[in-house]
Amino acid sequence: MRLDDFDPNSVKIGDQRGSRFSVGGAGGKVGCGSIVIAIVAALVFGVDPGQMLGTLQGAGQGTSGGGQVATEGGKTATESCTVDAVSRETCNALSSLNKTWQPLFQQANIPFSPPKLVFYSQAGQSGCGAAQSAMGPFYCPSDNGIYIDTDFYREMETKLGASGDFARAYVIAHEYGHHIQTVLGVSNEVRGAQQSNPSAANRLQVAMELQADCYAGVWAARNRDKIEPGDIEEGLNAAHSIGDDVLTGGRVAEASFTHGSAAQRVQWLRKGLETGDEDQCDTFAAFRR
Image (cartoon, rainbow, N blue to C red; front, side):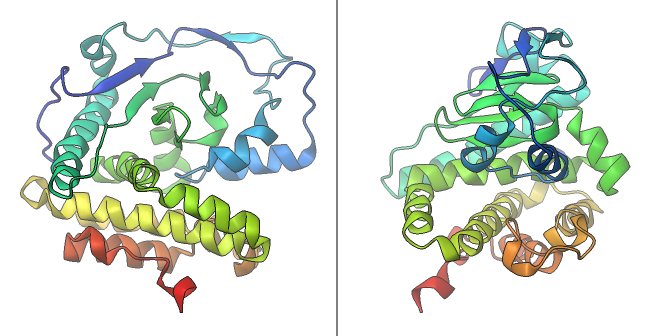
């Protein structure tokens, strides 16, 4: 995908790479369930920090509660975004997402502030709690931050078979979709519905994730002039690779899905790609029937 180079004045960047963070919570204990969640989350793009972080606070990564020194980051947007090629690529995607979504909110007369992209390595800290590599990229609604350890892209390629620059851009576009949901109030509505109807909690969470996939497709469709041959296939392959049924090898019942099946994720990413219309991303329609 031939994205324009980022404008350091138009992106919000945080960089925790090189900082020392404790990956163990004070007095925290890690159970087998937490470890399983961490392993699954490492393979999923959109971890829900509201549900996951409390469980993972005390999870270690091969240490006994000590800090870890990560790769050195930058002190300015320009420095952080040029640490390496993947950092630049990620910042370019963020810049493109800002340029695509901000005008749409302005046209609708809805106040909009872009999210902040926060780089970290191995371990970091977010407004939702600890950030750990095992969680994969995530969006934190408390501080409107998209958190990413770019080493995840290597995991994507080697363990999920999801390679390519468009597949990587899809990761950021999906998390950006969660920011859109937060700005629109969808996230709060879903959390309220989950609390009032726990039996529908998983299905509502799936709808949230699928809508973020659709929003990612809308962004790509509105930047179709930047798309190169093979990009769409990379994105759809990535969406398929992170379906709950594929990740779990079919061992988890659909009622327990949190992100949607491979077919569903492909369907909604494709819908966004084909329509370029955010109004077509109503994954909650079934709940209003």
